[in-house]
Length: 147
Image 1 (cartoon, rainbow, N blue to C red):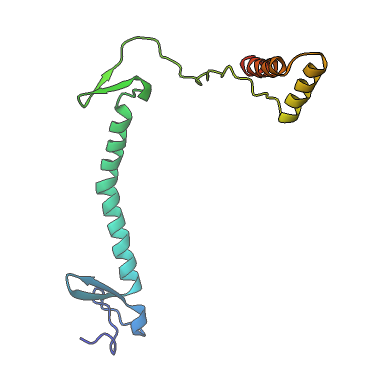
Image 2 (image 1 turned 120 degrees about the vertical axis):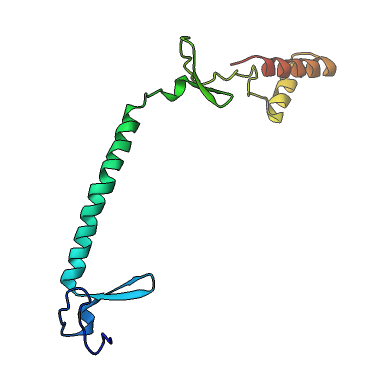
């Protein structure tokens, strides 16, 4: 039967005014043409069947999940793929690690400051070698002490 020329519903046999009003369902290679009201009834029945059959199963699964005993993650310990609860030891609180501060002082003398110090020591009457040594010792002491 050609449904384009003669648009008839396969289920109720109602004649439609045009082919566009028919819904086409393909089931295992066979086409069935349905009017709007039959299609709506089929969907409604299918929805009721799924509510009766599948919704109670889903609700039972949710209840089973709620019944399971809740164990917080911090108490779980995995050994040989089995979950074993830790002993009654107090829980260690992990805080920030305290970084060891370096004993360096980040102060230094510039070349001009060293030269000024060297010239002042020379004016006071020290020799070239003594003034040079004293400037070097002062620089070492400055690096070691913390401000």
